[in-house]
Structure formats: structure tokens, C-alpha cells
Amino acid sequence: MSPLTLNYDGRRFSPSDGVAGEGSRVAVYHQDGDLLWGEFSGGEVRRGVLTGTCVPDGTLDFAYCMVFEGGRIVSGRCHSTPTLLSDGRVRLHEEWERYGADASRGVSSIEELPPTSTQPAQLRTPEEK
Image 1: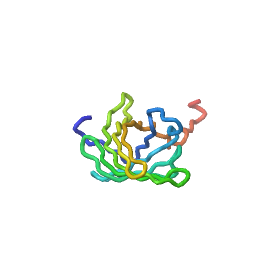
Image 2 (image 1 turned 180 degrees about the horizontal axis):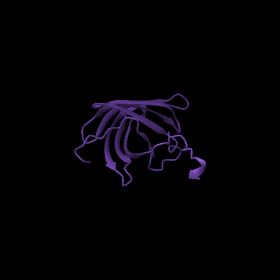
Image 3 (image 1 turned 60 degrees about the horizontal axis):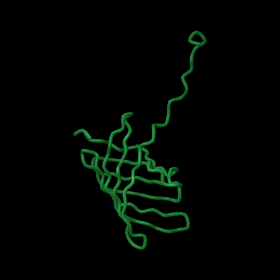
């Protein structure tokens, strides 16, 4: 990444490593200075939250907690390293660890979803058609 600060505020991410059923999970990130937080749901996750910090190169360190379908609760921590894709979106390489009865470690990746269009359709005059 460049020395410029990468701002995650409003960016949406989804798993990119093809884990069955997880492709529908979407996370929305928020940022204020070095403070990062977010929420996610989809796939088997009913609700998830994260909170942590972002350093100027865009690297993230955060804790997370999620509630799965059926009521299972999982918490852990994650270290995410960004890569800028050719189209300007961000891919995050995640090194995570889960605690408690579901203790495990692993790596995964998520990619920024393309922006959604919030622009109304352009109206044209009869002369422009």
C-alpha cells in the first residue's frame, strides 16, 4: 500500500475465498481516524460485530464476535493486510484466531464489493434522445 491512509468508512466486503455458503455474508466497515468498527451478517451468521484500529498503511487489528444460526456465539481476533486491486477495490488478507469452544486459527480473504449506484437515472430531454 502507499503511505497514504486507506479509509474504510462505508466500504462493504464479502468473502472471496469460495467458502460454501459464506459468499452471501457482507460486512460494512466504518472508520473515524484510527478507530475501526463494523457489522456483518449473511451465510450462517445472524449478526456479527468488530472493533479495532487501522494504521496509516491500512493494516487492521480488531476483535470480533458473531452469533450463528442456532445461537452459537464465536469471538476472536483478526489481523488484516490490504492489497489494492487493479480496479481500485481493496482485498483484505485475514489472519484470524477464534477463542473458547470453537478455538481455531486460519487465514481467509475478503474483497470490497463494487459501489452501489445511488444516482437517480438521468432524465433526457426529447432533443437529447
